[in-house]
Amino acid sequence: MPNILKSSKLKPEAEELGEHEWDTHKLDKPTINKPKLKIGNIKLKNPFVLAPMEGVNCLAFRLLCKEFSASLIYSPMIHVNWLVKEKKLPELIEFSENEKPLAIQLIGNDQKTIKEAVEIIERDVPFVDIIDLNFGCPEGDVLGLKMGAYLMKHPDKIPKIVKAAVDSTNKPVTAKIRSGWDEKSINCIEVGKMIEDAGASAIALHARTRTQVYSGKADWGLIRKLKETLNIPVIGNGDITNAKLAESMLTRTKCDMAMIGRGAMGYPFIFKECAEYYNNGKFNGNLYRPTTKERYDCIKKFIDYYHNKQKRQKFSELKQHVMWSCKWLNGAKELRVDIMKTHDEENMMKLVEGYFGGRV
Image (cartoon, rainbow, N blue to C red; front, side, top):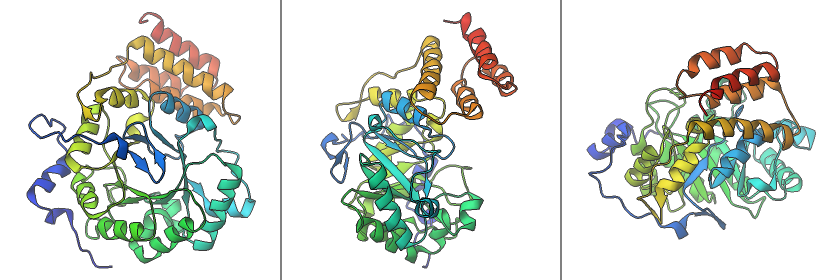
């Protein structure tokens, strides 16, 4: 497919969006219509959703983000080939009705396998609300399987996969894509239109190319261009680390929802921050900031959820989440280094309690 749109060819104001300056006080702030915050028949309480993140979105973390006001929870991606071969969900991934509304993300490249995978998901997780398809994962092992962002180089396959999923379920089907393979092959607008025409109920755009992976800045101008092109909801993704940036994305790109990924790692407070700032369809609330005690309580709550709400437990995973939870704390760099060296939960918690003991 020829390259129709390059970010460098965007009109000047869209180029400015690519820089996503978050100080928007000089811009008009259009009201965001809350009743339209829905994907298919699934209504959302606010426009802030948790991104699907492999190696991050364990059940305990997802439940915590939900508690902190994430309006839609995404699972980590599930490989359809494994799912169809085993005829069951992988033990590494658990679900709870308390996550609802819940989107389960599948990754694959074959219509038949996608169809079978959707049927297994609906059988084993009957409370799932949305089926999401991954066309954006940039990881090498996924690309080697000709999945994820690999398909942005072969976009004609994408609508067939989407239609296979749509035809297999009555639930909304969504897709997550990237801007393109590289800066010379930006094709998210054409691909987005193909996905819409195939019957998808919404599309999420991580406004980086595959070759960028997570480096550089996301080109928010492409999110706005996609929103201007499509009739289905557009979810913007890339570089949201606070409520001001969430405001900037929603008001500047006019996208329907903002997907938060790395900004939520160890900091589910970002959803409360965004939700409290977003009030009655516009940004006019107070900026929430957690106290040191709230940060400490959040770590303890995550550990409680990890032990009591999910069956699969692994210390290395627990430790990683606790280290993420210490970011942005004064003097926490040394704490994270020390935590990294621990080999059991008892010693890890001694370090955590030692840090917070004189601060809460």
